[in-house]
Length: 167
Ligand SMILES: CC(C)(COP(=O)(O)OP(=O)(O)OC[C@H]1O[C@@H](n2cnc3c(N)ncnc32)[C@H](O)[C@@H]1OP(=O)(O)O)[C@@H](O)C(=O)NCCC(=O)NCCS
Image (cartoon, rainbow, N blue to C red; front, side, top):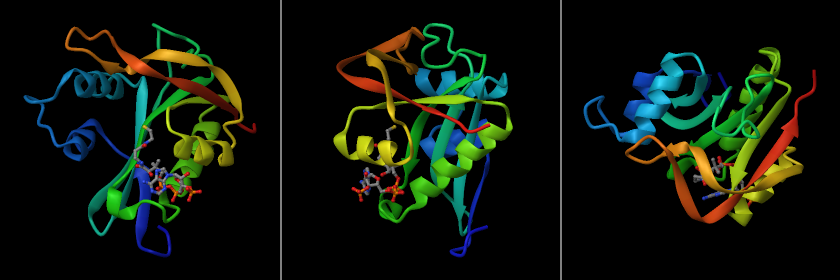
């Protein structure tokens, strides 16, 4: 618990659905993909809880078979869907969430993490957080799925960055 009464903790697929505003019946492909991976143990999810509300989220996928540059099941994990509710942004909560997740992933044996970025503002944050290597430019985010469950094509594209975790 932080000084502001915030708690950063692991959460479950039902809480992910609540954060995204879906029920199991209305969940689109990407939400179904996340739920499936969380329930099978291939993804974990941390949330920020404040006064009973969930105000933030960050997910780690351990193995992404379509593209092992993202996550290889052997110590490289992919971080995605990093969000803080609008009214709480710019107060250091995202940094706190990311650092908590990185330290828990390190304790779980993860040695390297990747993250996608397409905005200069976020890139500044990620560089500050130690994502100092460019892995590659991408047009497919494997965690963003089309209705046929295939990775969605991203016209604009994004950069995949990585960070080594201290043992
Ligand atoms: C990116 C995000 C999770 C960071 O969380 P945060 O709590 O705002 O981050 P912090 O307060 O710890 O750090 C602030 C930094 O975040 C970045 N940032 C990105 N969008 C921001 C926003 N709307 N407001 C404030 N900071 C933002 C900036 O680099 C900022 O640093 P700066 O003050 O030097 O510009 C959050 O801003 C967010 O949810 N953005 C929208 C969703 C998104 O772009 N997610 C990442 C890709 S999936």
